[in-house]
Image 1 (cartoon, helix red, strand yellow):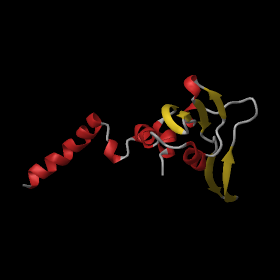
Image 2: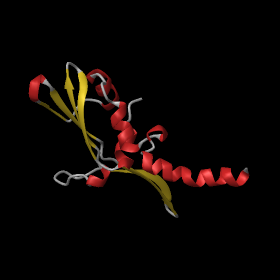
Image 3: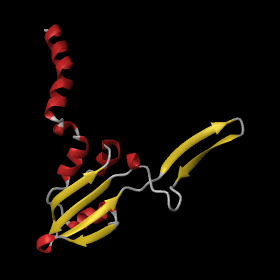
Amino acid sequence: MIRRLHRSFRIAPLICALGGCAEWGGGTTGAINSWNGARYEEVAAQWGAPTCSAEAEGGAIAHTWLSPYIRFGIFGGNAGSGVAASFPLPGMGPDPAHVCERTLTFKDGAVVHQEWRGPDTVCAPYKRR
């Protein structure tokens, strides 16, 4: 019995990898799926105002949000310790590895299409609460 149980724990990650792990968080896919059919007011309440907006086909409106590009760090040494924040300089864009661009298209106030660009580590936290 113990040997069989141990074997099932070894294949669980394989099953998860093949199945996408939707029930275990799902990374960016889980975040995307969580916003299907959401109202604009709900998205804006969680993410703030969109970075830009444009009219789409058929009376729809596409809104784009960019993740904030802020890095925090804690440092310390013989001279003391502190906390620092890093922002991009004007004219120098953020590193794409630290940005999640989310474009949601709304029709009649509800999400009908989504396009997300960015790594799971940055995009997955934008899941609907």
